[in-house]
Amino acid sequence: MMWSPIRALTAVLALIATVSAARAHTADISSSRIAPEGQGHYRVEVGFLGTDIERMFAENKPRSDVDLTEPGVIEGMIGKFIQSRVDLQNAEGQTCPSAVVSVGEDPTNPSDSKVVLSMDCSAVQGQIYYNPARLLAAQGPRAKHLVSIGEKRDDSNLTEAQRLGREPAPGQVMIYPGDPMIDLSKPLLTPWQLAPKFFSAGVEHIMTGYDHLCFLIAVMLWATRVWPVVKIVTAFTVSHSVTLSLAALELVNLPSQWVEIAIALSIIYVAVENFFSRKVDGRWHDTFAFGFIHGFGFASGLIELGVPQRAIVPALASFNIGVEVGQIGVVLIVLPMLLFADRMFNHGQRSPLLVKLCSAIIAGFGVYWFFMRVSELS
Image (cartoon, rainbow, N blue to C red):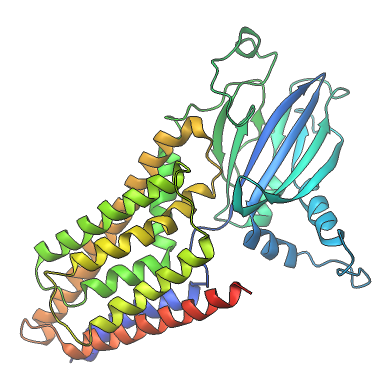
């Protein structure tokens, strides 16, 4: 009889294993900043996670006769890859000629890479639109592309020319596969109008942050009452909100590789602890302490979006709320499953076999992530 709940919970953990990766955070995110330079010329900066461009680039393998060891060859190919997938064009499809200016790491975000393009629309008649459809298609069905217009820290109000549509207006918009092209003459969304997009990104981040999910499940496995779980989640929320805010506001910056390793170690710790202690009331101390580390991991999901300072407050607030909603969703799924298993299969008591089996699986994930992330340091 006990094998039914065990199979249910281990199936969930197995699903996590099949889709998780060494860096278990939100991917498929790219961004672009379009800055007018006068007389129909534009600078387009396209940013993306290094891991994403490696995946996309691998799906479009270069010719076998290309020597990738030659200096600048890979950078040049990445530049052409991005150049061929974003366009400025008019409604009739006439595109603006473009040239690759530079390819390299984004100095403002060490986890990102950036391709800078120069586009000349002086000979293209009519309204100019931005079209990243082919880039979104290369990213995959979960792709997100944050588009900003204007210089990075331009907080000024719209000018008369921008209101009349003669010049692009500073602003942002998050677009997904299948969305229409962006009319550069029209004001984009304000930071607060973007809040629902960042909220959904926060929910997605926790639901696809498999290391965070394993951590939360591990600290709940011995819980038989709601109140200890409330304390566990509240403590985790308070501490990770602190470091999420500090990282997003660029007040504290820790190397992401070391943060990921520390998160893996926290998973191993709470999973192994289940073999030696059944006390749940005091586990909020664990989640409070480790929450500071996980907060930097959460921040990566927000920072990867390339949010400018003028939008940081609504983006941070809505993203954090999305993360909390996702956490509550996890609790509302896992805790009832555990209580149901107690009542139906073990006379209202928590099965040590169930807890230890799930803890062993979670600890195994933590060990796997730890060694994978350590290997990335080289």
